[in-house]
Amino acid sequence: MSVLITGGAGFIGSHLVRALNTRGDNVRVLDNLSSGLEANLVGADLELLV
Image (cartoon, rainbow, N blue to C red; front, side, top):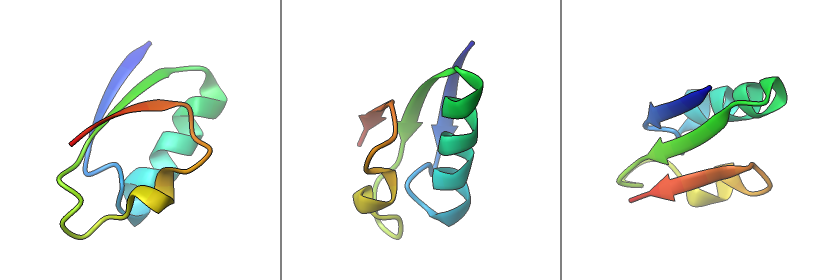
């Protein structure tokens, strides 16, 4: 399944990204990085849209 997560670089979003990766989903993250950190997504299989 393809999933778009808004705010995916934040605390909750980054954990959701990892859970969906584990499930085998295709993940895209939309985040302006104003309070989230790109470092929260290191190692995750995703497409980051800023």
